[in-house]
Structure formats: C-alpha cells, structure tokens
Length: 215
Image (cartoon, rainbow, N blue to C red; front, top):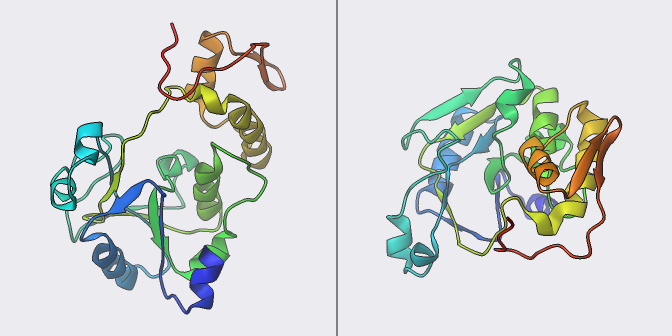
C-alpha cells in the first residue's frame, strides 16, 4: 500500500485499518500536523464503536466519539509529542489502526517487518523501529477514526498460534516479550506454558472462535 501511494506521488501516507471509518477531520488534522512536524510518525485517536453505534449512518458515527481511554486524545489543533529519546515503553501505545507519515519517514523506519505473519506484534515492532530510527511519535488531536464493531475474543484465542510465533520474532528483534497481557492470560487459561526460552502452546483439540467465552 505504501509503495502504491509513493508511486502515485503521495506527500503524506495515511494508513487506516480495514475496519476503520475516517472522521471528517482526520485527513485535515493529519495534514496540519505534518506541515508542522514533517518528520514525525503521526497517530490519531480511535473510537471502538458498539454494535448499535456501528449500525448508525455516518452522521451518527461522527458524533459517537469516545476514544480508547488508554491512549492520548488531544483536542483538534493540538498534539502530544513522544520523544524517541525516552523509554521504549513510551512507544508501546502506538497502533496501526490509524497513522500517517511521509514516504521519507516510512523509508527511514524501514517499513513494516515482513517476518511477522498473521495477527499480533507487527504494529509495536513498527513503533520500536521508529524510535530506534530517532522518529518522534506525535499524537494528533481531532484525527478521529471509528473502528466498526465485530465479534472478538479477549484474549484473542483464535490467533494463539500466530501470537506465539510473532512474539518470538519480536523478542529476537527487541529483547523483550510483547503482548504480555495476552500471553499471561493464555497461561492462566491453560493454553500455554512459559519456559526459559519462551512460551509453549499446550495441547488442545480446538480453540474457540471470536466472541466465545472461556471459563
């Protein structure tokens, strides 16, 4: 996608998850902050819509603003910078649901690591690569995206095998385990065991699908 945008002459590349609807101010807000911070990795707030909110028309969606509480959500026209000189953990909140950057910054970061397959870890890896390259992370106010509701599992047990593989890739690249909350929950559910060299999947005939409840 990034390559196609560059080939078509894009000055700023905006990435959106396939389930996300851009808010009316998303592109103008990203563009405004890009002009002030041309070398930054720009990230906007994301609202997870409920099933009922997802069924609204766009006018209703645009008024259903309740950004994820664990991430910064500055006001329109404002931004919150995160310095690459700070700890790695400052970049842990980045996610690839909605972000923007120039082709030059994308190349400087090195793009997404292609060693990841399937679900989990690739967006945190991208953020860590940005920090390692000295790229500032900038939370952009008003660049709202709206994630449409769909069934999920918490933790995402249907992606267990992918998460275990990707966690090992991340550990090798960055020296620490990602997605610890999920891995520890999997362990408490009897799905994995932590060993000195990593997390090991325990035998199980079948894993439940999205939306299943495990007790």
